[in-house]
Length: 162
Ligand code: FE
Ligand code: FE
Image (cartoon, rainbow, N blue to C red; front, side):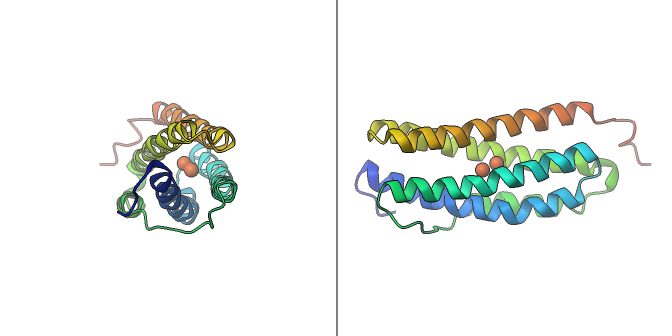
């Protein structure tokens, strides 16, 4: 921690989520491959394309602040993705339920991050950055809702693999 003011903290946390988003682009293809239902696989593939755009948007935000886009290891996402990786090997009967849980933990973490970043952008008078961050925040929220919808369509009887 080396931030002395809100702008420094803003830049530091942008670098943190910039690292997180790039790690997520590596994890989503594995999650799509492990998904049993077509709907869940499609949802992961769709969110992969969005996540690639989240990376691009963060580059635009950092450039708009005259900061070079640099990564700072996001330890929380490293941990969440490690947990997710373990769930890839879950038995097929319950794998989709497990993958959805792992993915929603990531989405909620991202939503918390982008919500703060957007609010800080507003406090700092960075209107353009605020709008870009809000766009990503909305997409994370939509993804979370989509995953809830898919979770509710899972068949509990099919999960009884005895
Ligand atoms: Fe994202
Ligand atoms: Fe996401």
